[in-house]
Length: 236
Image 1 (spheres, rainbow, N blue to C red):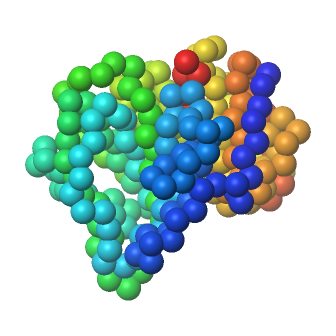
Image 2: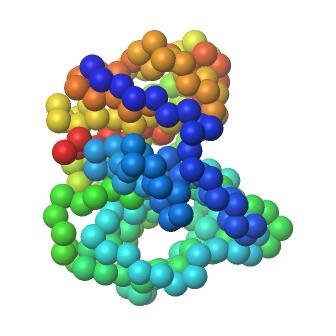
Image 3: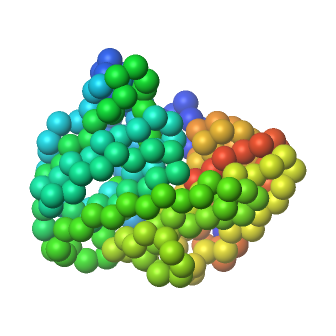
């Protein structure tokens, strides 16, 4: 088993006023040659978007983009004709493929929105762009792993064009979960959203993260009520 620990304080940070962003991997004006990616995971941004503000129309291509709302709401519009507002419990997937334009705004005038946005390299470039979203029951992740997006088609999760899986879990104090990787060539990047977690002997606090690979199973122990995200991706 190999691991790499990323303290919350080691993330890149940019405060644009309307956007307060933390970057787990090199992004925009923050560059760290040791923090380019974790396997096929290229971006994990922890964004706080001010009320009524957002990202104007901009392009993407050849990337799987997954958006998870932690608090607030986000309005999405794209060149494929999709338009919707996603809220906590909702997950959005966009396969940019050959190219897509989209915008993302916080429709709430008096409340900030906190979201995770992930970019994962696809297993094949040049696919037809696609969009999907789904509401997941938060109760279904209590003391268990709820997979919300994957390329394995193992349940009712959203599909992504990579042999990867994004899962969420809410653990009660002293609970233990074992995460079994879906592919032996994959690793898992685990971040604590809130709480305290022991991952194979490494202690993680809020927004700390650990990458784990060359193993088949990862043991997670909650020191208190804890929310986590698990991002399993191919390592090469």
